[in-house]
Image 1 (cartoon, one colour):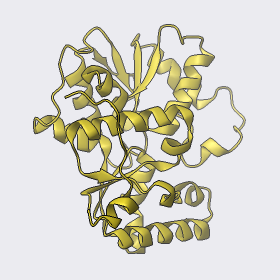
Image 2 (cartoon, rainbow, N blue to C red):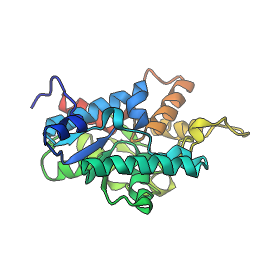
Image 3 (cartoon, helix red, strand yellow):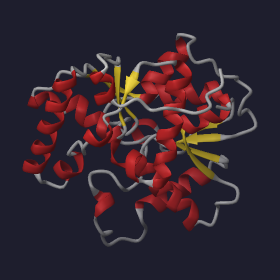
Image 4 (cartoon, rainbow, N blue to C red):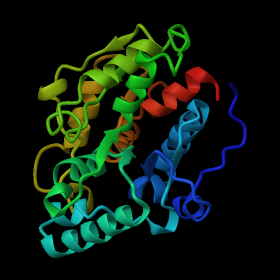
Length: 264
């Protein structure tokens, strides 16, 4: 199936027509406003359209989850954001959410229930891996077989939520050339941006965390560093530039690699 023009359904429009999509696709701040991560959003939307999934986005009604505020210590702002979002979910009767940001996934799954949310939350890698297992998403195993890939584990997927298998399962369905960094899975090094570190000045030290992690990735000699988090993508892309390796090493989100293999 070839996906040409993609129309993204908006929850309020569907609700007005009496339609109830199965999933809310939570775009997230980075997916909506960051130029680079908007490409990841488009890639995932193409996959949802390709799979003919019943979904919608909130559009202008989507707000921040409040995760950065809570990590930075502003509990009042976090709870204001969270309760506002929960009210929107209840208005539309939303029961399932898919996220492309691990930080959004973690706070929806593990922290919103304390404020009364009972929504089922899926990280997009869990969702896509299940689609592959069920045969809904058929990927040519030779599609990217000339590409060597290493995967950087996002902290909020791995250590926080034990999502290690799904990203590797997807990558191994794309290419046989998947190589691990020295520190991976539960021992993986943070990209340096989580916990609201993205929004503050660096502290004293001999080396930035993202440089250390980029050097680990480059030592694998992989031509692609695969990521699954907007913060990780920003930091590792910066690291590749800092090391002057943009010509031979690229950073792609796993959704982008799937789109490349499907040619949609």
